[in-house]
Length: 291
Image 1 (cartoon, rainbow, N blue to C red):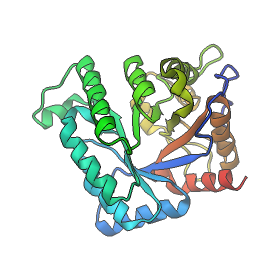
Image 2 (cartoon, helix red, strand yellow; image 1 turned 30 degrees about the vertical axis):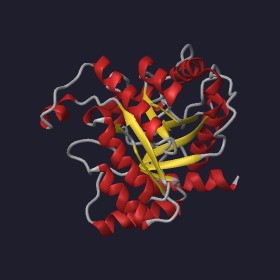
Image 3 (tube, one colour; image 1 turned 90 degrees about the vertical axis):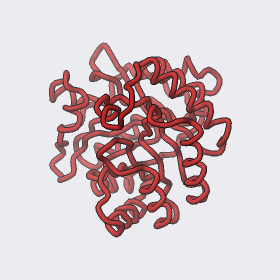
Image 4 (cartoon, rainbow, N blue to C red; image 1 turned 60 degrees about the vertical axis):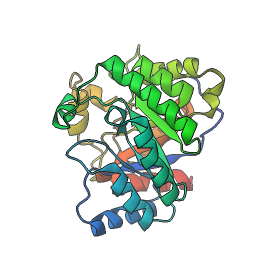
């Protein structure tokens, strides 16, 4: 059974982005036909955006997004998220501009600091310090906003410096749900949103709040596979993981109610799931949009 949203959540005072949006992430491509089939199916299921991550060993984001944009008519494409430390701002801006044009404006750019040292080593790049990576994220965001103001920018993260940059410069805030589970005394998601609100000031009402879902039921059992959240949150027990905002459990009706609760209590209206969750979450999308 899904656990309830804690009662001490922040009061919802968001002025915009009350309409739901849903994204789905693709981490494997295979053939062009398989990618096209997956993208068209996501579009049919009601997803708004198909996201591609940016990791060595995974698909190259810009060729994949271009292929998806060419094969679909309404589905947007985006990155969740670009490792900004891999790129010089001017070169990244060139690629973003091309995809923005080829997709006829159906592109949104997700940015992160980059965090996997082994990928920098494999690329033959020096692994910058955390502070240097955040500085580069800020510089990249400023450059893109100046040269491509029509491209929506998402910044995803959990730390104070990253969320402060996001609050002041991005259009979409990618929230992780915090690094611990909600309890009777703490609500990490509410804490991070309150931080964003304070940092954003008057522009908070213009921001879209996003939450990445890392696990949810796919077989009708109501029980999610916790493999991914166990990796990203190794210090939490299974019981704690089930209380984490990024983990969904229960029936379709119960999950839909929880998603509505995130919007009503926190102002989060944009949710991203993985491709393995697409069919199951498609039923949630249908229920949410029909009610």
